[in-house]
Image (cartoon, rainbow, N blue to C red; front, side, top):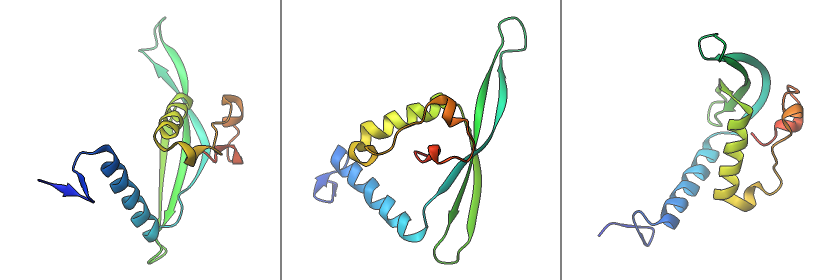
Length: 121
């Protein structure tokens, strides 16, 4: 019988506890992730014909500093507004209370690059 932290492996609470401990361990090694919307790209769906349409992908620049040697890692992610909205909804559903004071800004204010309105990232 596999037992993890007093519960059966696969138990939903056990998995959540393991995730929580992994997050805490990671936070001990690194500082907070800094993220801000730095731009956008206009993408086209389709081949450019009559049925093609375009959409905006936001560029989110991220940085993370390791505590042990102050090494900074940088990366960028490209996502549509709807993907941020869906992620926020999933995080609220899973973590609830931790996201009570975080909301997704309106789409119009979301595109104001570098503003505090992206604190939900």
